[in-house]
Length: 162
Image (cartoon, rainbow, N blue to C red):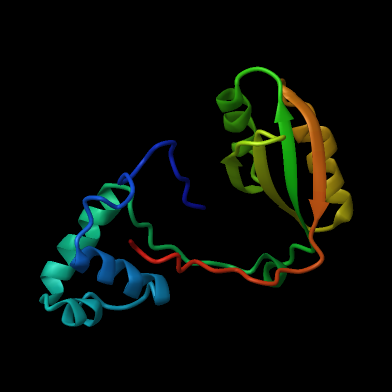
């Protein structure tokens, strides 16, 4: 099961995060398997206090602790980013495309396209099938441009908490 973000969830601009929250987030971004005592000690909290803080951040949608995988090492040989121009309601199209199993990342963007969609597939034929038979058939999908990946250069999950 993959974690799914909801539209508009979480803190706005990190305004209500304090230095302890930021330290806990930074530590868990580096290693999400840390016991609560390790980041808690750095923040001057007992393990229970760190646990409560982390749970609060999770409940607010600020933090998700997940296992990050490498699709290539899981047998996926084809990955692509799709740039999609939408006709109609962008949220409806995003919801429909985001529900597809092959879609691992989707963002609404400003500019000449409306959606950036990352897809994975076991091979080039399956990637083509996903794009042509599933995504292009979603009502409201207008222009679609495919950017097939050669390889991943940088994959970072440590944006830091401001």
